[in-house]
Image 1 (cartoon, helix red, strand yellow):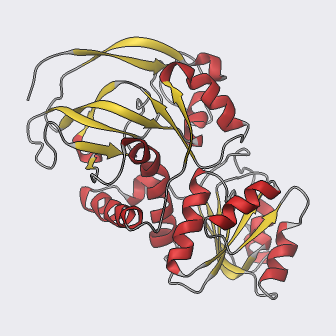
Image 2 (image 1 turned 120 degrees about the vertical axis):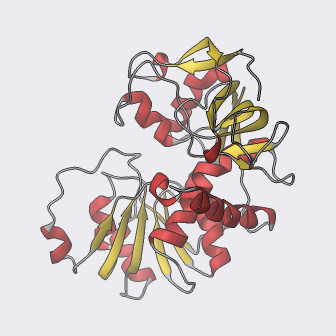
Image 3 (image 1 turned 90 degrees about the vertical axis):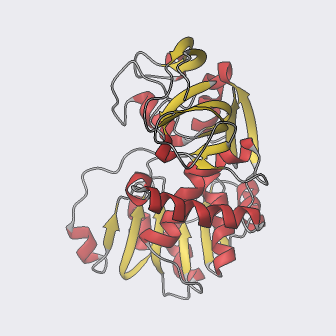
Length: 330
């Protein structure tokens, strides 16, 4: 354990709003207390949930840092930390807000060792999105293989992981996309079929692709724009998994619609409740790392940005100009 106090550069916001509220500031990083570690960060992941916190869709006390996932080297450990030591390569995907920084102190329980075969950039990009696919496919609705499923935004950061993971499981993934280019990308990563929602009716295409059977589960991270279409794609007693709101939050839902469309189920899961203990985090991470080191799931880093360029990164993410994953390099 060290008592040294360090400084770091970090992105802070003092109000909710557009990308302009993100400010690069010098901050003091306290030494780790019991159960904490200090990480010298090598890469930081960018995710749509970061925009939700920036805009205030997901409220958080201000002023605040931003970002949930990163990778780096353990610089110091607090009392009682046994699973990592100074010098270890580590990654995390469910940390407290504040990943957009060159250095940070955080709870050690949320940090896992990063295998030597996995780069810091991939480590930072994979944890939140990779663990999201793990809990969606292996916990929320445990895919067995041979299912046909619908996954929205199949060419996005989470979507491209889902395409590959589904292929590895023997699952036929129908992915929604917004352009022919994104359709080709999703198929190259393992999607069985794609639906271009810019000119195709999602429910009609799913009906045709499944020979009228529809699907047992829909994974929807888009939200408001796709909610009703998703319900129309489900078999009787099917499960709607609403795990994000990139088009806006779903609100004003009439539960009666679930009855009229076939006794449907709906869930709004989060990663945190699926990796709530050290044991659950280790189990989910182990499966994710095995998929990556085996080559079954590859992480494409679409763009990298300097910490100071985080505003542009957020604009690109919101405009859906990117495919694959984006990382900040502190």
